[in-house]
Length: 182
Image 1 (cartoon, rainbow, N blue to C red):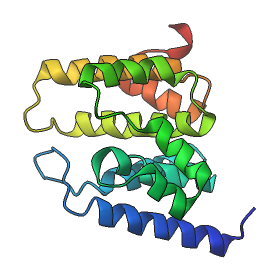
Image 2: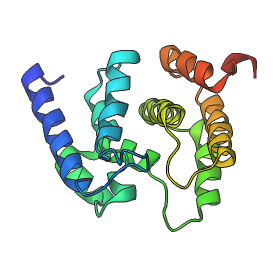
Image 3: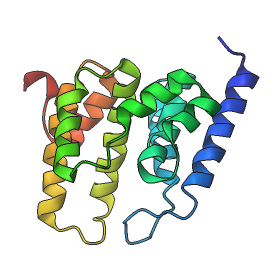
Image 4: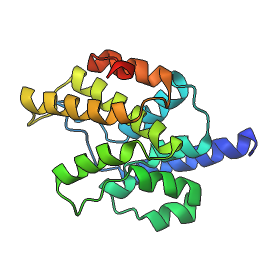
């Protein structure tokens, strides 16, 4: 186990890397929130709400959209942050060469067989995104699209049950169901 100083250095390096990669990106909300708020928020959910302090999970949370949404490669992630972080990021990265529908279905199909680390990142990502949708509808989205996102997220979350009770309880609350009964 690395000491606190080493862990802090790598986490700050990770935040800096993600901030540079996402520097020109904005969320689709009315405020055009800087995109970097999202991966930082996912990491915050993991530490503050889920009690997760595994540096690999936190790094993967911060980097989870860099390969999918920037010019970052998995090899680059590995060379800077190591193979463990690369593997988790790879698990949570959608293949953009597939259609949106195919990517969504693969998330549902692959959720249950994901590593515990990837499941934690996926749960925190869903929780962040669903809270964001409750706060503000993205530009260009209507009620139907928001409802479809909630329904699809529920399908993914059900496949992740048994990963982290704190996040699952919050997701059940926002989704309006009980994971264990469905």
